[in-house]
Image 1 (cartoon, rainbow, N blue to C red):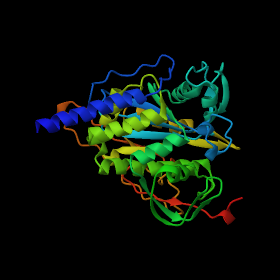
Image 2: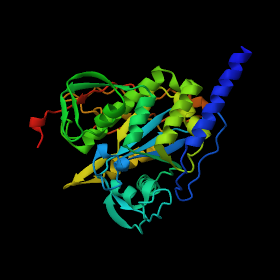
Image 3: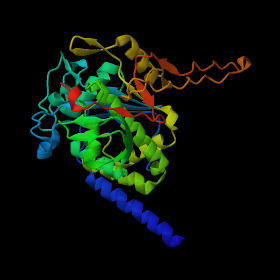
Image 4: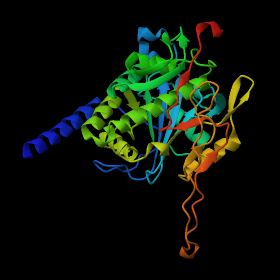
Length: 378
């Protein structure tokens, strides 16, 4: 037993050293600071962490001549202060936002900075000032402080999906996408590597060919990823956690506040105790104005206030994944536990139920993707 204990300690120690040496220099988010964390264990308090997926391709010829650095995937992870729930908000890439003043990025040489003060699509903020600029734009849009951020490129998605051994997905109608080279008949698949990336990139192969449909597809994939990690007890196994941390360190650019192994592991520690039915994926509420998307300020205000107050979110509408004509039946919103009036404690208001037209799903919901053949695409 002593030999096993020493060996286990050595494995964690080697992993710690290896991950620490894999982390690239952190990106300054402009004075934002992270919370203090224990050496090992769950992070204290809540977490707001922004993840940006860039479409530059980093010059890899497999992705063609991309030419630009755009933040085409933007997701905000919010973990409640008491670690009882988590919400992932997806922001459409074409959402019009006010671009803030952003300094040039020393770590991202293509990000030359901007004086800001103008309106543009959210994905362009990344091209002006890199990860810090997108973080500032989302913070300004939502009113939330965002101390942690990370960006990932196409090859990083490939490596991260490999690190978990693949993610199960289901397809109800044929997907045919010549642009990404992704073709699948209806059925169940476990995707990793290149196939996982192209599944997440496909847009024209989805039911309505829109970027909003792609967001739903990505949420369905991430919900399955959450179930996969939970079912394999990954977050309870220190060696597996460090394996994922190493994959993240090698394939993501992290903010300075996140460029610490203990922080990465402590955020995983906060997530591991959250039940799947308390993890919600939701698309940021928008309205169409011609060819543009604008924030639906009434509904988005309700959503952001709920996150700021750490209230549980319930998506009452259809699931975000493109599942054909039939919506996934929502679960009845949970009710608050009754409180004895004589105790002098106010009753909990219960979860915040979003309107039916706000799309999303819980991590415990299995949703499938509906595609379309080439002859239905323009």
